[in-house]
Image 1 (cartoon, one colour):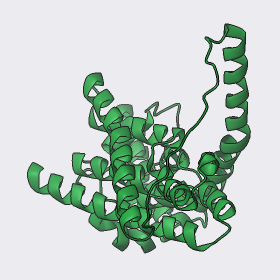
Image 2 (spheres, helix red, strand yellow):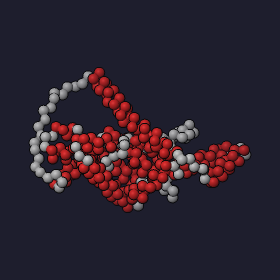
Image 3 (cartoon, rainbow, N blue to C red):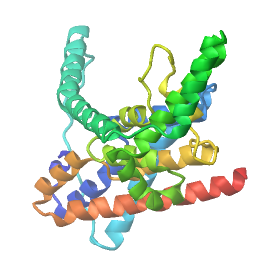
Length: 309
């Protein structure tokens, strides 16, 4: 919408098409999650990576603008003259009221979307109900025997393992698990598993939803009193079926690059449709940004996997 001040239609369209590559506030939770996974004990490195994510979006936006101006939307540029208003230092009351107003809008709009998505995903990840595997039943019975024998520490540890195994089995057989397994072959070359795939799908409605989505699919919050672990600790301990960690350095970097470049905002697409009065351009934007994100993430994952061994 800010491109309305550009008189030249060609320049305005290029601006609209590349603007979503610039990092927005909705990406901040994802950046914070990935940087915390990569550098949990190095704030300086995490800050540099966080800033690098913003710089990457700017560089790709400039590159795509040059590419579009030289291919699909060729033509000369026109000068843009804008009269800036006088700037003054705001007072504390004005700043606080503006902050409150923006926070209220976020809670009412984005917060509502995130809440609805979280509720839907919770339902999808818990239904239909499935019977626990025989291994879980055997582990529970063994834990009861250990408890009767007075070995409470071993019994509690075995119960915890049985509960995690039962939760994982239930999620795999739920609607969310089936959807994740369906798209896993497509995202596997990027280092993503079916659980991350569920988070990516939820992000198309709101990028911020990926954090709450991963909290749900990885079981964070269940038995919270017995397992007071943070999301980052849970993700760091996540393993694949072969026992290898899910969130390796290569996977985290690939996920970060994907979220920098991918078109994961349906509200943006709706605005582009309205501003261009055409369905062609928002579809083109989704196609090229998703393809760009996939290709860049694939390269990053392959290079880091080869480099780190």
